[in-house]
Length: 238
Image 1 (cartoon, rainbow, N blue to C red):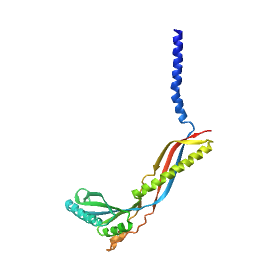
Image 2 (image 1 turned 120 degrees about the vertical axis):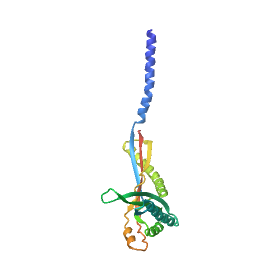
Image 3 (image 1 turned 90 degrees about the vertical axis):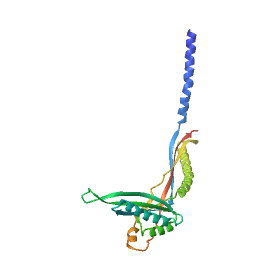
Image 4 (image 1 turned 90 degrees about the horizontal axis):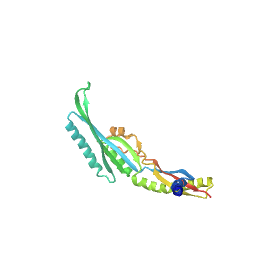
């Protein structure tokens, strides 16, 4: 009986030792690990022009009002479709009641409809905008980085971000007296899509005062695109 108990105790000790090995191995994975971050960026020209135009009318008859707004928008759409490299997007369209001075009785209706135009051809869109301002009003002018341009910039920055991360990893390894390092994990992230650059519609008053079409001034500027490399390394000591 004593021999059996002694054997059982030895077996339990052996199993306990084996069971602790994975835990020790897990601890080893985190030994001499440090977290690092590297970021690279570049200025990229905004190569997409975005113009928002709108019409706003009021009428006591909501059906006539809707028909008038539709006629104005359809005319603008037909004119815009004649210009190459212009992307058309219909924006919001809303109508709401107009009340009397007491705020009790509906005396009419007001409706507003928007048209959004996008193009990499600034000259063509500027000219079209000036022509459309004879019937529409300027809602705003934005400039952004086109999707293909942004992707090309991010692809180039990705390589630079990895290179910068490796440089920091080597610097940290040298500072700790290590002989080399290995990357445990690495995450690459871009800064997303920055808000488009918005210009105030300064040409709106000029268009209203002058019967001839007014071509808006264009100044697109640049936006910063960045790529971040976040990760951790394990420093291998001599």
